Every structure is written in structure tokens, then in C-alpha cells.
Image (tube, rainbow over all chains, first blue to last red; front, side, top):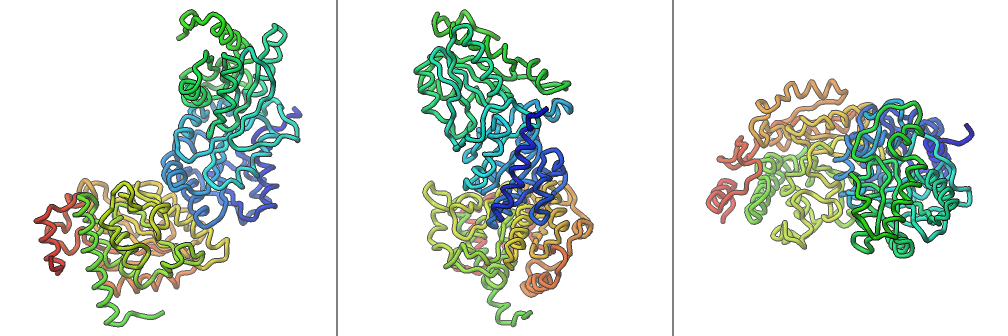
Length: 323
Length: 278
């Protein structure tokens, strides 16, 4: 073991920040021992509210608390916040622009035990489409703990996407995160690998292995899917001319969607997309092999890097057209 | 606890009549809106905005003000009528309702219109949001009260009951819901579309205090609101029996008038029935 899970990093950071900021209140929908909001609940029982299995209510009660000047963190599974409570999120959080923080646990395939009913593979598509929403996906435990304070102190709606699993460590304690500012984790001009969340660590490994083939891959971490760091992406497109996106999410509407939209409008370039290809997930034995099964493996990223580079050099898009 | 004098009751009845007229004028001018559910709310809104609510138009952000959430946001016209007559914005704004640069939206918008506490429109949100707002008041040690104006058809939405459970779990005595029980919804009578009876027992079963009132009787509405202040361990709902379209003969109890604006002739007849000289 040794690597702290994203959810534990979040839960502990939230409890720690709760001591610093008395306005923070926390809500959960009967999942506090899953989202790990229970660390906060134990430290501040008077500032913790469990609404039971009722995610729309979770969001609306959080909205009321925000209207009353509190800073609510509403915790539930990402699939339920983004889908069952989507109307509450749209109307009462985003349109009414209330200061609600949606902490969406068990995102992606990370709830490998419960399977596709619990997976959240379209939540980023839903949340990105909401005006006023900030969408953040941390890459590892260190980064997750950094976001809690930043998210709490931002005045407005935030969707913080959290994995149940541990992610390969990418950052050290010196990391500073800023909403909307992507991170260049590795320089390189042959191809640009853009990753978010749990795929950042895998993408760093892919870049390392590509370098052994003589391919110099730049790695960008896009932790904020919205607002997107357009300058960083356009610059990468101009300088590398070939890109790959990698996310634990459908290739529709998430990181791939965001990057495609940006490139189409600013600097069209070959783009390969790593993510679930318009399919539901399935139950697995652990999150890592499940991600590999859906084409999110290091090998997949490496192959995508080569393909993007090939498309750039041949200029022949049709040759590599895939289903 | 002060009961209303006869002259005060007459005054509030007069305000209710005025709010009806204002709402119909707005809806007629815009050729859009929801007359039926505005007319059923006139006395309730008169008592709330002109007697009960601790509000100050000079200080719309006053932390200790009472909050009213119009959960049945389609009755926006009567909310705009009350807010303007209470001084939150000029009554002339009514004439520009719906225009692109006017702050008055089809449904209430807290970011655009002074005095609107919460953005509503899609039904069902008020109780849960009100519960959160009541909780925040308790946490901050503020003694404001939260009033939620609910529709009866609206109570068909599951989220209403999720919020009701939360409010009673946390003993939110600073939360009061007023149910505009007019028994008519968009598609027809509530008792046919999806019967809500026994409505009082439903709320009782969710551990709310339930009071009943004739929703067109100023004294009864006022007394129920006063009685709610003496309930200290749970939220209260006032089941206010009303008539949809009240005061305009051809609109009363007619689902057709849920969301249709009157034409000129209908408008003139309505004003005449309400005693307004055209």
C-alpha cells in the first residue's frame, strides 16, 4: 500500500480545513464512510448534515446553507450528483449561482466492486455543460488535499471530482494549484499528452517510455476542465502539432471534448483520445486492471502518442481513421 | 402576538385585491404568465409581504431579514407585484417584464430582481432549500424565519418530501411552508391528476406541525402564521384552502387559466369584476 487514496486525502483535508474555516459545513447522502466526509463529521458534528439517500435534497439543502452564508461541501457519489441531482445542480447551484461545492466521490471506474451502476463516466460531460460551473479533477492525493482550501475559498459553484482509488503519486508538497491553470509536468515538442485525474500518473509513465523510443512527449495536466487553460493547450498544439487526451471518463464530453472544441476553434491538429469509447463499464477485481481493460493503460497511451505523431508527420488523417 | 384590527384587515384585503389587479395587468401586457395561481395567492402574499415578513427594501441584504421562497415560481407576477408595492423596485418595471434588458424574468431570479430570495421556476425546490436556509440561520445565531410558498400540484414531486424529512429531522421551527391548496394544476384538477389527499396527514406523518386556514381569509392566514411562531420543535405547514383564479369568475377553478394570458375583452371583464375602473 503506502499510497493514500484520493478519497482519504480529501476527507482528511476537509476535516483539517474545517478547523481553519468555521463557515464550512458538510453534507452527505448516507455515504460518509465512502466519501470519507465522516472525518469532518467526527470533528465537527454540529456542522455535518446527513440527509439520507436523497441526492437532490442534498444539493438543495446545500443551496439553502449557501444562501445563508455558509460554505457547504455536498458529498455523494459522482453518478448521483451529476445525474439524479442534475436539475438541482443546474437550477439552484449554477443558474442561481450559489456557493455550493459538490464533492463527487467514486468517480470514473474507481468503484470497481459495485460496477457500472455506480461508475461515473459521463459526469464531466454533464458538469462541463453547466454555465457558471468550475470543474476540477485532482490527479493524486497531494493535489486533492491542496484543492480543498482553494475550492472552499473560491466564491461560486465547484464540481470536485474524486476517485475512490489511489492514484499514482505525481506531485510533492510544493505543488501549488490555481483554478484554470494547467500544469506542464514534462517538456517535449514531438507530441503533447494531456491528462486529467487518475490518468496523469499513467501518462507520465507513458511519456517516460516514449522517450526511450526517442519520442519527446510533453505532458500537460489539466486539472480544471472548466474554465479550460486554452492558452496552454493552443500553445502545445502549435509547438507539438500532435496531441493525445487521457481521462477516466467517456471520450464524449469530458477532457477529449474540451480539447477537441478548443483545437477545432483555434488550431486544428491531430488528436487521439484515450477514454471509455461510448460504452458502459463493468465490474472488476481492482481499478487498475479495469482501466486497462477499457483501453486506459500505459500501453494504450503510448500507442496513441505514436499514432498522433504519425498523423502529424504523414498528414494523412484517413490512414489512421478508426471506428 | 397581536391580532389584526378590523381596519388593518380591510387594508390587507384591499392590498390583496390590488395584487390581483397588478398581476393581471402584468400578465395581460406581456401576453404570458400564470394568472390562476397568482389570484389564489393574493391574500397569502398580502399578509406575508405587508404584515408578517420582517424585511426592509432599503436593505435587501440585511442578514436578519425574513426570507420568502416562492417555490411555485410560476406565480412570479404576484411576487413582482408585492415586491414593487413594498418598494424593492419601481412599479414601472412591470411594464417591461420579459424584455431582454429587464430584470424581471419569466420566473423569479435572485440575481436579477431585488427582493427575490431564491431563483425558482421548476417545481419542488423550496422546502429543501428553505431547510438549508433555516439551518444556516440557526448556525449563525440569526433569528430570521424562512417562509416557503408551495403549490399543491408541486407536492407531487418527490424532492418536496425529501426536504420535508430533512426539515423535521433537524427540528427547523424557523421554517414555515404555506400550501396554496387550490386543487387545480396544469392538466386539470389535482384530485384527478394525482390525488394528494390526505394532505394534512402526509405532512403530519413527516413530523411537521400542520395548521389549516381559509387562504382567502386575512384573519385566518394571519392567525395561522402567528400560531406557527409558537411551535418550537418542528417546522410548520399552513394548508391554505384557496380557489385557483379567485376573484375572476371565468378563471375560478379552471385549469385552462393556469398559464394563459387573458385577451383584451377578458382582461377588461376581469378588472371590472375586481372593481378596477379601466
